[in-house]
Length: 166
Image: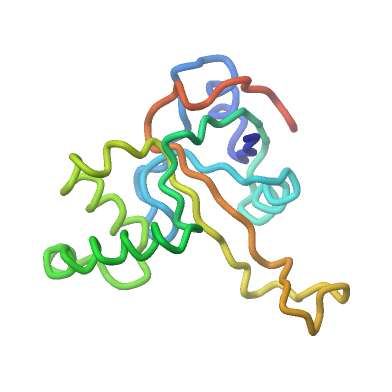
Protein backbone atom coordinates (compact mmCIF):
# COMPACT_ATOMS: atom_id res chain seq x y z
CA UNK A 1 0.00 0.00 0.00
CA UNK A 2 1.15 3.54 -0.68
CA UNK A 3 1.71 5.75 2.35
CA UNK A 4 2.41 9.50 2.63
CA UNK A 5 4.51 11.22 5.28
CA UNK A 6 4.90 14.96 5.98
CA UNK A 7 7.94 16.29 7.84
CA UNK A 8 10.82 18.75 7.63
CA UNK A 9 12.93 18.77 4.46
CA UNK A 10 16.06 17.36 6.13
CA UNK A 11 14.33 14.28 7.52
CA UNK A 12 12.45 13.71 4.26
CA UNK A 13 15.72 13.98 2.31
CA UNK A 14 17.34 11.41 4.60
CA UNK A 15 14.30 9.16 4.16
CA UNK A 16 14.37 9.31 0.35
CA UNK A 17 18.17 8.94 0.06
CA UNK A 18 18.81 6.25 2.70
CA UNK A 19 16.89 2.97 2.50
CA UNK A 20 17.80 2.22 6.12
CA UNK A 21 16.44 5.51 7.50
CA UNK A 22 13.00 5.97 9.02
CA UNK A 23 11.68 9.22 10.51
CA UNK A 24 10.98 7.73 13.94
CA UNK A 25 8.79 9.55 16.44
CA UNK A 26 10.12 8.33 19.80
CA UNK A 27 7.77 10.34 22.02
CA UNK A 28 4.29 9.78 20.58
CA UNK A 29 1.65 9.30 23.26
CA UNK A 30 -1.65 9.89 21.46
CA UNK A 31 -1.38 7.95 18.22
CA UNK A 32 0.25 4.54 17.76
CA UNK A 33 3.55 4.83 19.60
CA UNK A 34 7.16 4.75 18.47
CA UNK A 35 7.72 4.59 14.71
CA UNK A 36 7.24 6.39 11.40
CA UNK A 37 3.72 7.50 10.52
CA UNK A 38 2.07 7.35 7.12
CA UNK A 39 -1.29 8.59 5.89
CA UNK A 40 -3.16 6.53 3.33
CA UNK A 41 -4.07 9.57 1.23
CA UNK A 42 -1.94 12.42 -0.10
CA UNK A 43 -4.67 14.89 0.91
CA UNK A 44 -4.25 13.91 4.59
CA UNK A 45 -0.48 14.35 4.34
CA UNK A 46 -1.08 17.82 2.85
CA UNK A 47 -3.44 18.61 5.72
CA UNK A 48 -0.76 17.47 8.23
CA UNK A 49 1.85 19.54 6.38
CA UNK A 50 -0.28 22.66 6.81
CA UNK A 51 -1.58 21.86 10.30
CA UNK A 52 1.86 21.11 11.78
CA UNK A 53 3.85 23.60 9.65
CA UNK A 54 5.92 20.90 7.95
CA UNK A 55 7.90 21.48 4.74
CA UNK A 56 7.85 18.32 2.65
CA UNK A 57 5.86 15.22 1.77
CA UNK A 58 7.30 11.86 0.73
CA UNK A 59 5.59 8.68 -0.29
CA UNK A 60 6.58 5.03 -0.18
CA UNK A 61 5.24 1.55 -0.64
CA UNK A 62 4.54 -0.10 2.71
CA UNK A 63 4.72 -3.85 3.27
CA UNK A 64 1.76 -4.45 5.58
CA UNK A 65 2.08 -8.24 5.70
CA UNK A 66 2.98 -8.05 9.42
CA UNK A 67 0.30 -5.51 10.29
CA UNK A 68 -1.29 -5.18 13.73
CA UNK A 69 -4.65 -4.04 12.37
CA UNK A 70 -6.61 -2.10 14.98
CA UNK A 71 -9.40 -1.56 12.43
CA UNK A 72 -10.20 -5.29 12.66
CA UNK A 73 -12.68 -5.70 15.50
CA UNK A 74 -11.48 -9.22 16.39
CA UNK A 75 -7.89 -8.00 16.70
CA UNK A 76 -8.98 -4.92 18.65
CA UNK A 77 -10.84 -7.13 21.14
CA UNK A 78 -7.73 -9.30 21.52
CA UNK A 79 -5.46 -6.27 22.07
CA UNK A 80 -7.98 -4.86 24.56
CA UNK A 81 -7.79 -8.09 26.57
CA UNK A 82 -4.00 -7.91 26.55
CA UNK A 83 -4.10 -4.27 27.64
CA UNK A 84 -6.41 -5.20 30.52
CA UNK A 85 -3.79 -7.70 31.75
CA UNK A 86 -1.13 -4.97 31.75
CA UNK A 87 -3.44 -2.21 33.07
CA UNK A 88 -2.09 -2.04 36.62
CA UNK A 89 1.55 -2.11 35.45
CA UNK A 90 0.84 0.65 32.93
CA UNK A 91 -0.95 2.68 35.60
CA UNK A 92 2.10 2.38 37.89
CA UNK A 93 4.20 3.73 35.00
CA UNK A 94 1.85 6.73 34.73
CA UNK A 95 0.29 5.68 31.43
CA UNK A 96 -3.23 7.10 31.34
CA UNK A 97 -6.34 6.31 29.33
CA UNK A 98 -6.14 7.85 25.89
CA UNK A 99 -2.35 7.46 25.68
CA UNK A 100 -2.63 4.69 23.10
CA UNK A 101 0.93 5.23 21.87
CA UNK A 102 2.39 4.71 25.33
CA UNK A 103 0.15 1.68 25.89
CA UNK A 104 1.29 0.10 22.63
CA UNK A 105 4.94 0.90 23.34
CA UNK A 106 4.61 -0.75 26.75
CA UNK A 107 2.87 -3.85 25.40
CA UNK A 108 5.35 -4.24 22.53
CA UNK A 109 8.17 -4.17 25.08
CA UNK A 110 6.53 -6.16 27.88
CA UNK A 111 5.25 -9.00 25.72
CA UNK A 112 7.67 -9.02 22.82
CA UNK A 113 7.15 -12.76 22.21
CA UNK A 114 3.66 -11.88 20.94
CA UNK A 115 4.13 -8.37 19.59
CA UNK A 116 7.37 -8.97 17.67
CA UNK A 117 5.32 -10.52 14.87
CA UNK A 118 3.95 -7.05 14.05
CA UNK A 119 6.17 -4.66 12.09
CA UNK A 120 3.48 -2.07 11.56
CA UNK A 121 0.22 -0.86 13.06
CA UNK A 122 -2.96 0.49 11.46
CA UNK A 123 -5.81 2.35 13.12
CA UNK A 124 -8.62 4.75 12.33
CA UNK A 125 -7.98 8.43 13.03
CA UNK A 126 -11.07 10.58 13.59
CA UNK A 127 -11.00 14.33 12.97
CA UNK A 128 -13.61 15.45 15.49
CA UNK A 129 -13.15 19.16 14.78
CA UNK A 130 -13.75 19.00 11.03
CA UNK A 131 -17.13 19.86 9.65
CA UNK A 132 -18.81 17.03 7.79
CA UNK A 133 -19.20 17.66 4.07
CA UNK A 134 -22.72 18.22 2.78
CA UNK A 135 -22.56 15.15 0.56
CA UNK A 136 -22.38 12.86 3.60
CA UNK A 137 -24.35 14.99 6.08
CA UNK A 138 -27.23 13.06 7.67
CA UNK A 139 -25.95 9.68 6.51
CA UNK A 140 -24.18 6.99 8.48
CA UNK A 141 -20.97 7.71 6.54
CA UNK A 142 -18.22 10.12 7.52
CA UNK A 143 -15.34 11.77 5.71
CA UNK A 144 -13.74 12.64 9.04
CA UNK A 145 -12.06 9.28 9.55
CA UNK A 146 -8.88 8.07 7.88
CA UNK A 147 -6.55 5.16 8.44
CA UNK A 148 -3.08 5.94 9.73
CA UNK A 149 -0.17 3.51 9.49
CA UNK A 150 2.88 3.20 11.70
CA UNK A 151 6.05 1.37 10.71
CA UNK A 152 7.67 0.59 14.04
CA UNK A 153 11.36 0.20 13.21
CA UNK A 154 12.04 -2.07 10.23
CA UNK A 155 13.12 -0.01 7.20
CA UNK A 156 12.77 -3.04 4.91
CA UNK A 157 8.98 -2.62 5.23
CA UNK A 158 9.26 0.70 3.35
CA UNK A 159 10.28 0.70 -0.33
CA UNK A 160 9.93 2.86 -3.47
CA UNK A 161 10.64 6.05 -1.54
CA UNK A 162 10.08 9.28 -3.43
CA UNK A 163 9.24 12.95 -3.15
CA UNK A 164 5.73 14.35 -3.41
CA UNK A 165 6.51 17.91 -2.22
CA UNK A 166 10.17 18.78 -1.88
